[in-house]
Image (cartoon, rainbow, N blue to C red; front, side, top):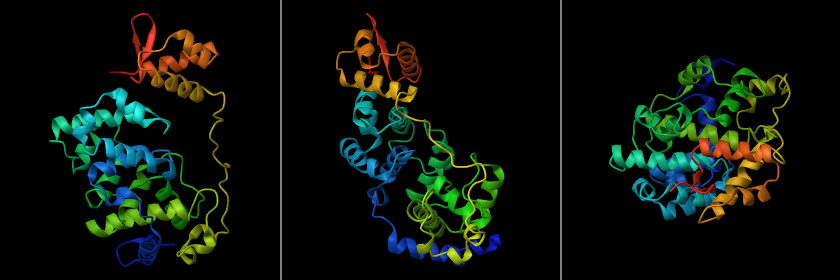
Length: 296
């Protein structure tokens, strides 16, 4: 398929997916929120399904509806509110980001990619997403879902490369509609389409509005030559040990002893690795007497 078929507001694929989005896009609360709500959602949605994020986002925004509200709370409060959402380093980074926004940006989420990229925990994708979805600006938003749709529709591949390349960025940039509104709308549409229809494991090709233009479908939907990527087992892993240790520390208001942690996770080597990584990430602090607690 020629890339020109995807370029600009009038391209068939852009028009088809935007129509699909108008009819099928979910009414997610952060889509009608302010820039802070969008930023919070992007932190929470990293490697976490929407269904798990929804209640957490509502609780977070109810408690801390602006960056200064969170900045004036403690890191421990943020970690406790994060609960079992997973990847708790995101909570600490979000707290740091709120502090920087409050101190350096007057409490308002910045509206330039350079300033967003300077915030703790904000990388290329998150900055682009906030520009598009919070500020309505032209920004090439390349998450896993978007990259998969483009890899299939344009290149006939089941999934994109493991790591984004400059060539992929340049090609995507040449495909995005030029205007701010059209670009932001397209970003939302193609991302939603990848999340709901052109999914990784079970794409609904029969319901696809661009199936007649999809290079992957035209090629017979070939599987990825290297086989599916698999997430390492969680049960008994260092990740589970780290999560259990942090959960035990989080549940204590006065700090927890090494002996209590040993009962929580008996494997000494894994437990020590978990504690060391949590200390290094600033998610746990060591108190006098060998107790462990959340940072103040």
